[in-house]
Image (cartoon, rainbow, N blue to C red):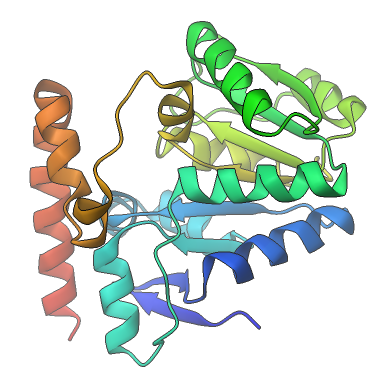
Length: 244
């Protein structure tokens, strides 16, 4: 049974990785559709400043806790079983389950080079997984509108799960604009495409457990990420203490 908490005004699923993965599989098997936001500090802090993004998060079927600060807040609120559910871990778990259940998946996002490497790595890890389709779209607007051609391709593929790697918040707006048109469950997994392609190194496990993955990523890509983490981490702390 899934539990739901609240972190700086946004709903977050306060459950385990297994529970969330099982719920997604059930939704996919029933053709329930819906979308899953893999939320971290950056997403929730941004949602406090962007009403449209906050609305997208509130409409999601599930919002996972991708970040130890979110997990710590949930546990302090009494959800002791809450776990960190990061995009790469959730995608890996679902690919394993989909392979066992013969459920086709679809990959949408990223660049062509990373898509090729990711497909190869996933197929090597799960040889029986059915990758029903994949595409690396041309540059999309920050808030992509619904695209009937994309809907048609995904529906014809028979995929039950669509992994979306467009980055936050573009992938969240993409999922929200397509939610009424797709039977498949869409999941915004962000940097998981880069990690699974091997183009970006993931933080050591101890840094992930300590809530320091953001620091590792900043050291890897300082020019691109330092401002994002400085601003959003500070905003998250501000909202957290103000809402107490």
